[in-house]
Length: 288
Image (cartoon, rainbow, N blue to C red; front, side, top):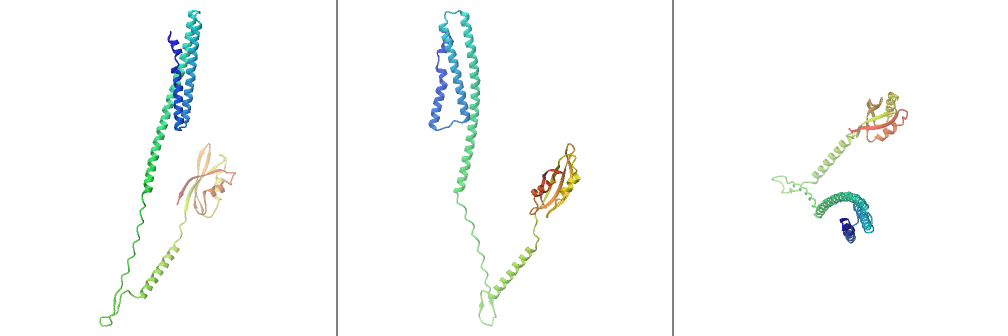
């Protein structure tokens, strides 16, 4: 019996992948593990491998049947059939090897993804443990306020030869005088604070005003931009900056009060001059 006939009668190797796949799915169903996209791709490749093995088995069965029924034929015809079957089996085997290589590569990628997920999970667990420890620790009580020192009693002796009366705690007149001085100082502080001028928040804005083309009158465009007037707006220096293809943009500086003028208002007012202005951009924005 030739090697090809022995291989045709062998069935255990071709059915092994099906047994392994069935066993893996059984244990995954018991453990409640859902298949990931990469695992589904791997199972599809395994199915393709099984189909390829079935084709090889069918071709081998066909060769076996041809050998049994074609004993009366000439030897050259048998040789050609064997060569044809061997070429088909070699082609199927090369395809099977390529798919196995792809499967191994997918398995490596899947293992890498699983390792990354495990590392991330361990980091999250460590962070959660740190947070739980910090929350379980009792908060420190606020420091008690220090009690104000009691005023020193004032002892007054009237005269050596007079009465023996001694004023241990002072008089009510001194307390009233101290309260009056304190209230007067508070009023003076409030008056000084109200007399100070309030700080006005200002910003320096650099605008880029772009024309439609190189034929736009840039002097007229700058005149239109400076015609935008508002309370808290002060226009500054300007210059023309080349953009390309003979087109220049107007770069102009202005100082605004934040409570009165904003960048949105400036863009809306400038873009109203549609004959000259294509767009307005904020090139720089600095607080003063």
